[in-house]
Image 1 (cartoon, rainbow, N blue to C red):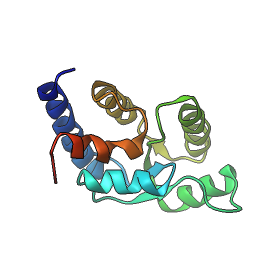
Image 2: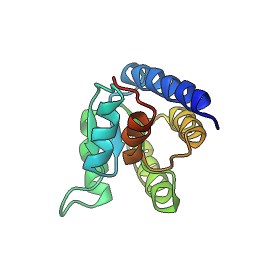
Image 3: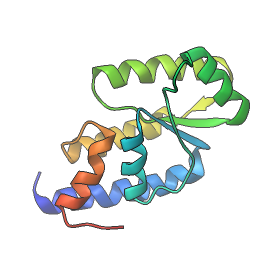
Length: 133
């Protein structure tokens, strides 16, 4: 994709993240650099890191379900991230949380257009295109 196409995809991603602030109560990511990348694109909603020291998936899902009703699992779009997404989404849904799978799919399409498959790299894309929020 050319630079103009990437700029358009990045802008659509920014708009989608603004929409996400209204659609979900919490975005789950894999690590602190993912949080930074979302913030660099202007996302101002609640973000939590999937893995906390000494907390298993079930305990984390219970904690989330007790506080949030709508969640976006925004793990990386690689094998490990997809596995985490499936596992956490199923646990959360079992506990009554609405997991926004369509929003994840929309983000995945835009990230693929940007040729990026890990969330933490989004701020690098923004910088490389000379874009700032």
